[in-house]
Length: 162
Image (spheres, one colour):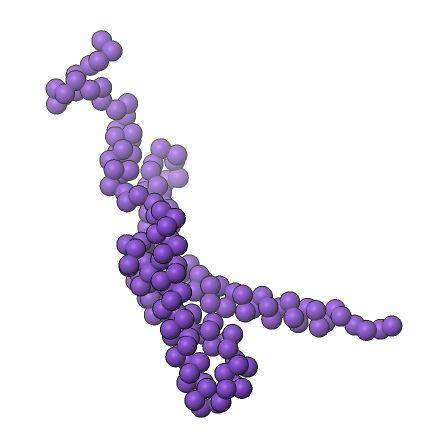
């Protein structure tokens, strides 16, 4: 009695419930999570292409503004180059060149059913436009903004009142 036959007659015990069967079928269709080497290769490829854009912008700045302007605005132009690269790919909702090369896709996990019951499996969905643009802004200008904020705070709180 421990080994009941299923309607198909293969001798396996059927899943306990319909939701467990659906959960197993959904999990079988999901792509596996990205491996660390793929993520790293994608990031390095994206860094390479955004650097090419930044270098071209820096060359234009040096041509029209001279080498001193290039040195003066180098960090800002690099951030703008990164922003342009990500805006033209991720901002439009398509894969970056690095993600395409490694066959990756940016997703978030969402419950498959409107109800938030624990029995419904989570499924990957594409990032919303707001999340994509927030990522682009933070990735492009986050470090530059942090440096500017620290410098301005140091200037504000460093008073020589001796």
